[in-house]
Length: 306
Image (tube, rainbow, N blue to C red; front, side):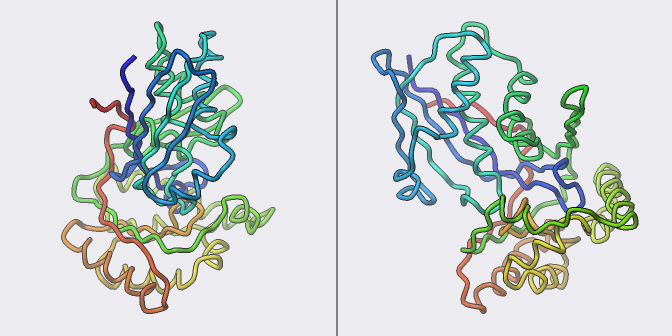
């Protein structure tokens, strides 16, 4: 078989008040290439891009791409196909941009391409959700756009929202890692009724403001009481960076996923200035960072022609 190539977008989960339910796909991609080998009885792995040397030293028996591929073969009751898997990372890992979700989604698509009767997109999303444990990263990585997804006893429910063309995102990624497990550990076990009401109202306002292009509402809509106040303490100068983004004309800013990436929702005309201002806060504090102006990805994971 010829090599199979997929590219999967970065994702920004939670989107402020949408904890574990909202996620946004962004035009920054990890690319994965699978070259099947009929003689192989296991996958081999090579890496390029961010943290390639560190990734190469990990125990590849737990590689998420290979694991996700196996779940497809089991679900489809098909014989496993093995070969060489090459991962090229443009998305900084362990920074709240859905790097692990790109590996899961890539594995599902790579394996699905080898099947005589491929699984549907819905079936792939169910598998991705079961592997990740929550849908806010894997759903936009697979589907693109802003995705609202809920794990319910009746099944996984999800909708997609097309974002206004005038909205872009200034993203700053410091050389500070925040493990998801640790970021969840700082969250309180209970919250007040008032805080719960605030988040419900803000999440509702966020989605409707995007649908109706009332983007000035985002400054309030992105405010959160469930996770941001607690996770800010894990990211140096977080509040200063939010303020810098607002001062340069951003609609609002929040933590991407569990951090350490910070993301500002911006009018297109000021996005570059917002990016520079956010990065300057880290730079002046002696913390190196990567900074981007990104569009929303509207298609999700895609196969790529070699």
